[in-house]
Amino acid sequence: MDHFTRKDGVLCAEGVALTEIAEAVGTPFYVYAAATLRRHYRVFAEGFAGLGGSAGAPLTAFSVKALSNVAVLTLLAKEGAGADIVSGGELARALAAGILGERIVFSGVGKTREEMAAALDAEIHQFNVESEAELRALSEVAAARGVEAPVALRVNPDVDAGTHDRISTGRKDDKFGIPWDRAEEVFALARDLPGIAALGVDVHIGSQITSLTPFEAAARRAAEMVTRLRALGHRIERLDLGGGLGIPYGDGVTPPEPAAYVETIRRVTDPLDVQLIFEPGRMIAGNAGLMVSRLLYTKHQSARSFAIFDAGMNDLMRPALYGARHTLLPVTEREGEAAPYDIVGPVCESTDLFDKDVSLADPRPGDLYAFKTAGAYGAVQASQYNTRPLIPEVLVDGERWAVIRRRPSYEEILALEDVPDWIG
Ligand code: LLP
Image (tube, rainbow, N blue to C red):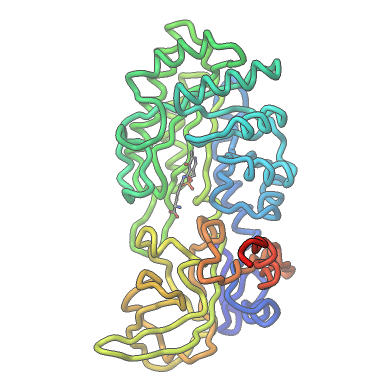
């Protein structure tokens, strides 16, 4: 579901023609539809409303890593979203967007002591702790400040999410979480450590998961862990089930409907009386964004035809990193005969290849195209490789639109660098 449709043959973001934005900000750029962001957040959060019994209302903590622009976070905060963060930088973003500490959970295997201190100062809802060493560090930081850190221990359920190897996190050989068979021991340690209040169990098995089976398996294992820990006298009040729900990428794979996901989780967690916490990222942001790029040239060599765009792998990394495919739409459709092209960017790498054998109808230099499903893990993963400035982000809401991150100038990029005197 998205809000990118054609008006008079021209692709629009809600009520705004992409040609108008391209004219004003130049290409390439990312554009997000506020209506899609709101709708996806609501579908998710409303699905879970009312679950969890007396232990507290469910918390939908948007996974900031998926799309971290402060304007987007502010929009989601107004809808009631919390934040799942993985760094001090993301904490700063969430707070700048007006998300209260009490709606923030802090995930990630490598939190520094400085980041822990900042999160304690912000009185966040929960630290998702992933190792004994991290637990001890957090204990020291919290005790030194005379506070107690609310903690969920992320356990590794050893469930294969059946997704791309590079975005799987819940198998026993992945770097994430505390091994299943050591969880009881680490909870016992947590009980004895000063400055730690271990209140919850956390699992997250991966991203772009397109079947309910692994979700159900992980939730069952986590529920089993809650019951076991309670029997051992631990006060377990929260269950964080992470993120990971897949979305359609135009590759013919149909992920489960959010309602079916909700129902699966409800069945497993109903008897527990815990506060449920979710960390959806892609499901909210993915189909809310496009990357718009201009065709620079076409060329034909050997047996292949190439369409060379002004966006490169540094702007949208997912195809180069995971072989991900983003459907390409012409902003203005042409009638001409279609032929297959390899879709490439200007970066000096052979992996700067978005897709192969994509059928384009009469492509001409200067034409605008949109890469679909680019809202999640698009702009956030971009780099300035080849000293190509980070591309702008634009937010559309109905008929209104605004640049929410502008393109830096070369001067701004170079201003971060210094040439020491001794180079001469
Ligand atoms: N919670 C934790 C602890 C995570 O590590 C992640 C994603 C999420 C929540 C959000 O997952 P989501 O609902 O978005 O699937 N760059 C890759 C995806 C990496 C996901 C990393 N962790 C991509 O472009 O596909």
